[in-house]
Image 1 (cartoon, rainbow, N blue to C red):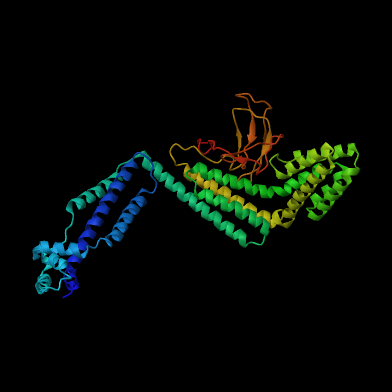
Image 2 (cartoon, helix red, strand yellow; image 1 turned 180 degrees about the vertical axis):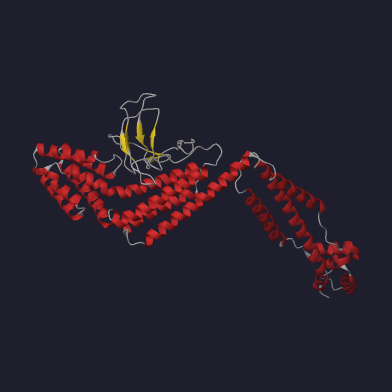
Length: 470
């Protein structure tokens, strides 16, 4: 007789033992999940915890799922089942048969046969019952009750968490809308592949940062930076026109100025090559005039603009009298100007391209408005978008400068200060829609700022009239 016959006879007992182990494992996991969730629920009364219900459900679901997987590996072994069967009335028959499983002695054979007969006749359903750990179950149910009761207790932290959830939903909604608009632009023929590539890169970065935003300030800063980057693309055509105007006053650069006005990359390269060849033949007065023209053109743009930096470097090289260095700088400037002109001639300056970029720009403004309005419910938060509607405003601190701005409604305006910076002095000006939250940088000497010139810095609190009750 084979010992496997005895194993088979106690299989019903093994199944019930396995089920008991599974019940204990699941009950323990449910109790552990209750402890974790109770701590989380009552912590949420003191500190904002977003998506609490969802988190609690996930903890319970994960605990139960883990316990079910674990229970699969809790099936008892044959020896343990035989010992249990012996304790139920077989009086060590099975464990003795197991120890004599390889003994061919007639007495051992008879013992195994007797063990098999007794094991097969055992009523395991009656002798071995399933056990529910009542204490674990009662404790787990008590924790569920405590968790439910915590949701009935009012708390400022809960209000903050709820407002944060609304803000997160709004951020996600606006990110999806912007992504849809990006996809529509990709299908449009109004933008060149080069411009689309630039837009996609910037929008991908913006969407990634937007989804990582932890609060209103982060979201608005991300959208503001994206608006500046978008305006920088639209600004390229304006930059070339400024350069053309600045270079038109010098006879040496007059032809180059015309090529810039025409956005003709080929003519620009030819004029720059001609300028480089004539450099060695120029008198000191002509070199100084050329250097001054390049410097003036550089100052017409923002110092952070790459073209401005290339122009400044070329101007310095020409004034130094080093022909070799000057030729290299002029060649580098030639490539930058030709590239900018080619980009403009493709699409950015076209009406269809402008319409597409303006549509995306408008959606960015709308997204900032919606997120700012949603975030206004956050207690203790005084964050909003300044200059979104191109509103005129007055402040206590007078400031010197003049500027104009445009907002969602396309409103334009300008203002000027009293020329002094005295506390309590009068001064009025127009807030620009490009003056965005947490996005600041150097301004040009004339007091004006071009889109895209500023760099992202630490967030500063900015108040709108809506937040201040205006």
